[in-house]
Length: 124
Image (tube, rainbow, N blue to C red; front, side, top):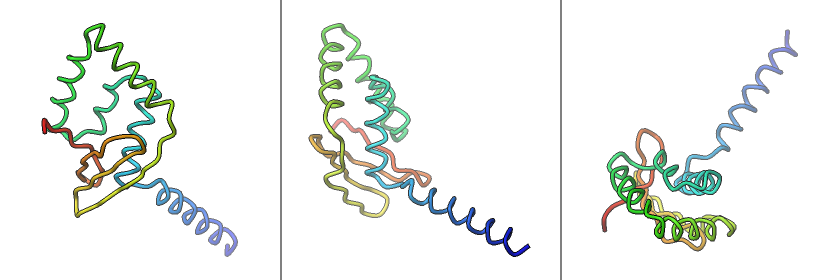
């Protein structure tokens, strides 16, 4: 009985460590968003990483990028971005807001919503 209890405790500890190591920092979210975008080759895949008030702005960008010449430019930029290694160069957290910069990118604003870090896109 003792051995099975110890194994169960070890299994629970391993799961806790794995879940804890998966990370939920603003940088983790920024990297996941970029990886998803590079995998799908679709800027629209960013939507699940955005705050609710940012989604209409993303829809507008997606519509603007639908013209053939804009789409070609966006695809080229996405290909160039995805060809570079991705790492967090800075992450500043202030309460439920953060600013994250990935290597070679502009800083992005983020906000914690229901325990998840999401990207904030504004007109400014």
